[in-house]
Length: 433
Image 1 (cartoon, rainbow, N blue to C red):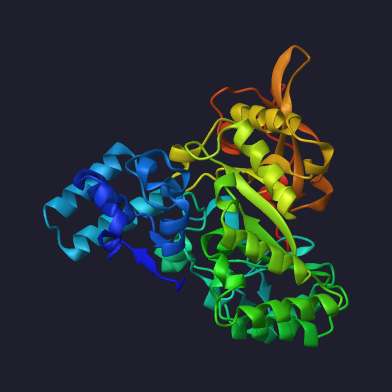
Image 2 (image 1 turned 60 degrees about the vertical axis):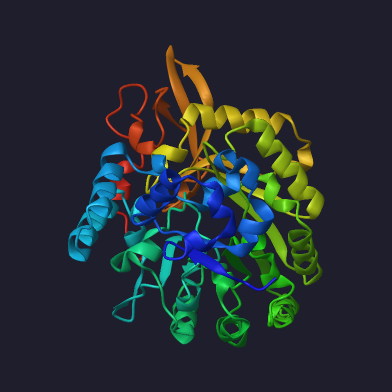
């Protein structure tokens, strides 16, 4: 299969789109003007069940849905489109809505280091041991997920993280001996040609940095375009590069975004997994818990079981971030914890490597451990899996129970405390200090 993608400009050329009503097509165009839209022919032909597309998880994961905007915002853009508004008027309304959708969640701008007098806008360094690198050539995706918290990478240039200076990346890494992991992220680095991977990876390997132990690649390509690792013209070269990294003594891990067990059942994805594992690549899975997609403990249990059968290590269950179409996908913190707990009960101990449900917040990754009653008060029991301050990791803390809470910002400290223990430090915390 040769790669082809469809965007807002040509999605009506998709043969299967004729199954949609004109109203449904217009809804895609309306929401797709605000939230970025791209879908690959692999997703269209191999994953979506077009006989049941309205309820199909992969259709919802890639095609914008009317409910992903509030009624007011949807009608605002729909009205402008129907009335033939000028480009400037339409763009102004779209950008206002985008800015209202919290395009920079979890204080990402605070993660950008200043080095040699320059802001490194293609690097984030939030957690002590891990550096995120945004290669310029990898800041798009084979298909866009409708829940993606990095939607501004594709829609708002002022919020885009990217850089291409490999030597600058190496110099920063050398200056931070506590960093053991470099995570290539995006967008999706796996859209890059192998020559770009070689540019960055060889720079890291040639530098012989003793504290570099792991190179990670955050990607959805495994199930949105598995041919990247099998049939693409430079797929063999990419696998040889991965083998080279492994032989150099640096672990290489693919952080695969896997949202539903259905995406792991095609022959193409199984072939890709086999090739990666044979090249010495470790594959770990992560996904947010998403209403309308996988908000079922049985779906999660099936997903973990199938992943492990194929050689993938279940890693993270996230809570949908407070950005973009959060209200369409979000479940309450209590629901998230119960789904996680009930899925956990359905699998054996070897599957229980997955951690969650976890919120990636400004101070760090906060896990919902459960609901309890302490001193006659019903509370959420929480802890940090990762934190801006490593001393916070593993420390339990408590929030007053709120059955409607979707995110940390919805919670108040338990026991009538004025604020959580980390809040003052988070306000003034600067990692570079």
